[in-house]
Length: 159
Image (cartoon, rainbow, N blue to C red):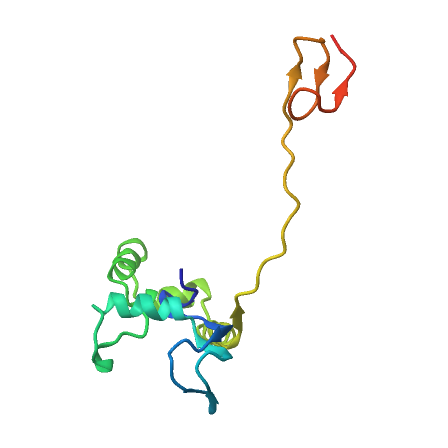
């Protein structure tokens, strides 16, 4: 699943940084450096899974001019949003956004900050597994079993 960043409803691929290996069988150029076949390199750019999804959404075009660069639409261009504002508040979108205190400049700044940050695919630290409580009364001995199966930590019979 790709990583995306929203600009008011328009979804763009996030930036990623990941270590890859050149499995193309030929020398490639990455950031101005020649990478031989079978050699590792660092990819910094748009999220590859998101780019693949964009390519699929566009109908898998071979012509780059038919490619799409984002999904969705800006909320201020959404016909349902515009209709709702007109019906509920009897005003246009610009007046409504001014009324609620929406700042387009702050939204653009926040979007720009998010677009610069890289998402790395590091392995998350493992959390300690949850120990589930189980057990009950062991019928053979009458002991209360706290966790696990017969013979695990026992508590004195509390009846």
